[in-house]
Length: 161
Image (cartoon, rainbow, N blue to C red; front, side):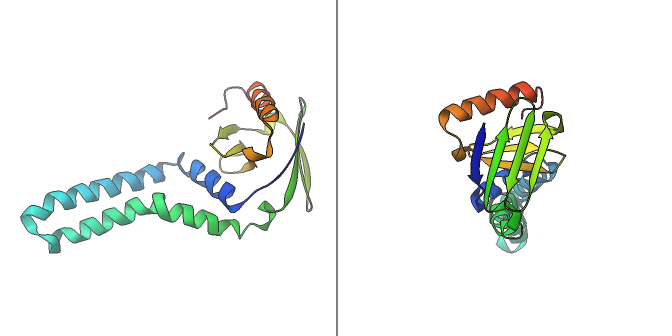
């Protein structure tokens, strides 16, 4: 199966956010943000706004980091990785997969894949703890999408996230 595609900043951001949700720091920021807001809310009636305002601000910063700043940063970061943009061709078969672009070409066995993740918009083929290939779902026809999912589940058993 041959799948031509191009990654966009939105694809890159979607994958980066999905990956960050596997990291403890993502949830630590959310937890700290909620804790700071709860502390600020409980302090406000007894101590007033002047004392509780730092807690509200701290809570907002911790909550906004993963929910707002991370997506904005990921879209900006895409511009720093010019190899991500541009046309690519994914070749997938029983023996493995290959990726071609104007700048490079690679061929790998399925055993290289350490994990496989699917978001609503992209597939992420992990080749290490933090390194992954992004393939937009929009590149597949509905038949190709079903075939690709079945093949990956067969070739990368137990590594599907």
